[in-house]
Amino acid sequence: MRGGPVPGRAVRAPPLQRPASGLPGQLPAEIEGKLLCEIPELSDITPLPQLETETPVVKILHSDSFDDALSYFRAIVQSGEVSMRALLITSYAAIVCPSHYSVWQYRRKLLAQLKVDPHREIEFVQAILLDNWKNYQLWYHRQQLVASIGGRSDERDITDSCFEHDAKNYHAWSHRQWFLRTYPPPSWLVEERAYCDRLLSEDVRNNSAWNQRMFVLLHTPRDHPEEFGQILTAELNYTLEKLNAAPSNESGWNYLRGLYTKFPGPWDAGFFATISASCDALLLRESQSPHLNAFMFHFYRDWAARQGDVSIMAPSVTIAKLLRDEIDTIRAKYWDMMHERVVAALAAAATTA
Image 1 (cartoon, rainbow, N blue to C red):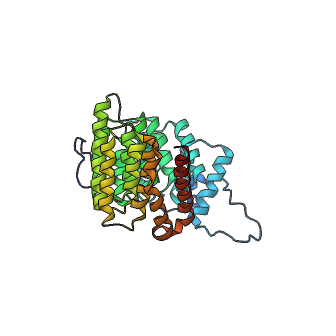
Image 2 (image 1 turned 135 degrees about the horizontal axis):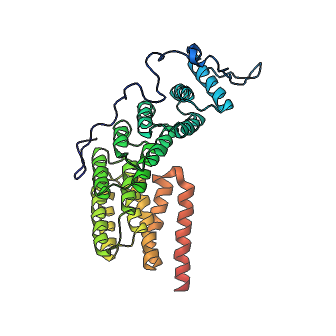
Image 3 (image 1 turned 135 degrees about the vertical axis):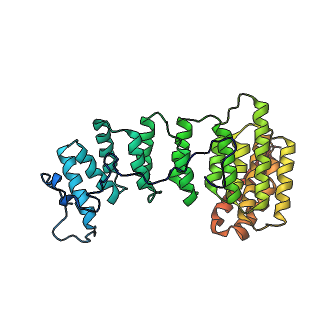
């Protein structure tokens, strides 16, 4: 795990070690490196090659091992064979083409009918994951296996290891959230918030860690409004501290806006003053930051809507013009549209006053 153990979370052995040979469906040592057509036990299977026209416009070049494994895989799918050797063929196919969805789907059918221990299959998947972190099919296959054993596998371990290589791996974060929603470990909210804090300490622009922090907050119980309000206040201070270190970090500004738009909390006049003062101070350092200015534009509009006082959004007129003409010109048409909306809202309010 990154940077030492999470406070309150048990330290477990590093999860990613290549499993020993002998797993159901794994390649036995005596045939490893061979093509399926070289294995005598498969001689009665007639492989089905990929259908190609006689003169393809663009012929896709495949390795011999790819053509061999997929040809045998097509043959067992066509015949509907359910056997350990069929499982072996899917092992070959999964190794040469780990993103082949049909291979994993057929493999799950074999695992169920052959009653293979899911724990052993998890080890097999783990070995392939080592070199295929961004493979959705592998993560989905693993999810199905973990579900089949009732979540008796702390999937935070495997994702921790993945994040050592790629801290923003979408599939790993999705898998982690699925596990935490479906099989929440004790004290996971505290542990996960500490984990996100560690990742953000290493890279404050890690948008995945910010997203996970919001995921934790959205799953935090709100049975005691006063206690939850204290959590929101702590999150506000934490976010402002991180933004002070990196004022041009879009993830932090999105998180801050999420705090006051998604949750009822201690958002009073003091909150408005705190945010306004913090933004004004940061503008002295980062006046050309598109993310800071965009946040201020939306903040004044959000606060005007919350208070029922359109006049509060008046500063958004100047900010929108600045973003349109100088700071965020690549989105000039968007900011021009937003400028017109604010001007129209202010004019309508003035007419009805």
